Amino acid sequence: MLKVSNLNKSFNKNKVLNNISFELNKGEIGVLLGKSGAGKTTILRCINGLENFDSGQIIVDGKIIDTSKDIYKLRGKVGMVFQNFNLFPHLNVLENIIQSPVNIFKIKKQEAIKSAKELLKLVDLENKIDSYPCELSGGQQQRVAIARACALMPKVLCFDEPTSALDKDTIKNVVNIMNKLKSNGMTILIITHDVDFANEVCDKIININNGEIEVVISK
Ligand SMILES: Nc1ncnc2c1ncn2[C@@H]1O[C@H](COP(=O)(O)OP(=O)(O)OP(=O)(O)O)[C@@H](O)[C@H]1O
Ligand SMILES: [Mg+2]
Image (cartoon, rainbow, N blue to C red; front, side, top):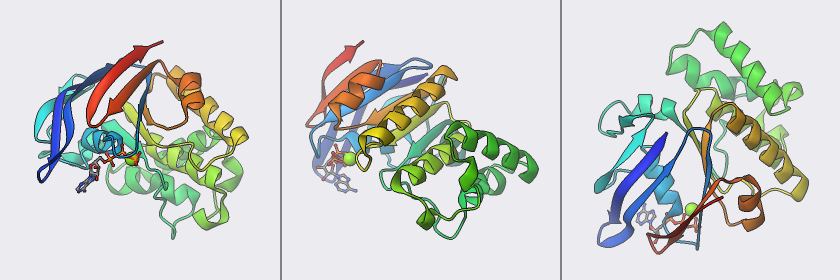
């Protein structure tokens, strides 16, 4: 479902990704582990089309990603939940979720609302549909961000440090949601420093050191 081959990326003269290659099958959860500055976020940003890369290839759902073309189609295939969630502060929960499907993907509003309600059920936040981000806890905001990313029905969902701001119980919640998504066939790529969390959710650990893959462990 996701295949990264020989990905290379420099910022000016600073080479940050050196021949990164790995694959995830449909419904697999992969974790990127590595020290601060290893290049993990840059890998996700390349996969999501937020960053151009120098050479290599990224294939999602059998199609080569060409970031120079049709970036919105790509964003529909690869969802991203950012570390700080990036919710729109002036929109309520429902509006946050339907904004992109309705305005960019031209899905009918009624349909988008129906799917949003189903997603809010999945992340157990039906009762917060009218709330604004500032009225939600960190864990709740994160679940809205997950629902929002899922609203575009991506093939691959990426998370940058999803558990860094969460307590143990809320992390359990996130593990549950990820397992539900996985059982729906979603392929998931997660950056984390939390080794316990990684071991609990993942099928594959990809260890990044200084822009290179050190080892890939399949479970
Ligand atoms: N926009 C940018 N311009 C220049 N250098 C950058 C840029 N973004 C990242 N870098 C550099 O690329 C390297 C990898 O950064 P990246 O954010 O991918 O690391 P990371 O593994 O996600 O680290 P962390 O765990 O701290 O989030 C770092 O040396 C960083 O300084
Ligand atoms: Mg990072």
